[in-house]
Image 1: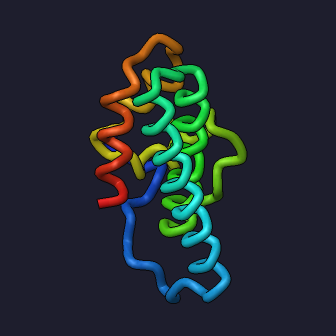
Image 2: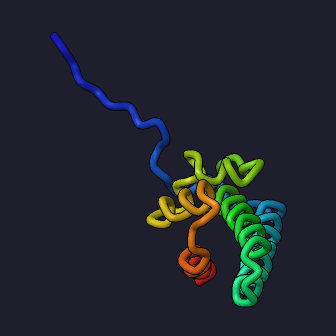
Length: 123
């Protein structure tokens, strides 16, 4: 007899059993505030055609957005920007995951689409 079975490596996201603590909410808010500031800085630098500096600011914005999303989902926070595209944290990017992966991997990517994608995270 042969039996086929599947095992999910990362369980589906479900509602957390306990609400976030005040400390967790404060850390999420701090990460989101840093994300918004770095994104704004990246936009300003890109508009002034300072693309290397804008790229650094956008990388930091990606990092802080991933940290906030990881805390919200009760996942381990990434320690560096390269960990933001690894599972399970990468699931927070949704449909923008390939765009963010390409942006972090290749230094010649357009900065406009990534700024637009990150701006939608702020909503």
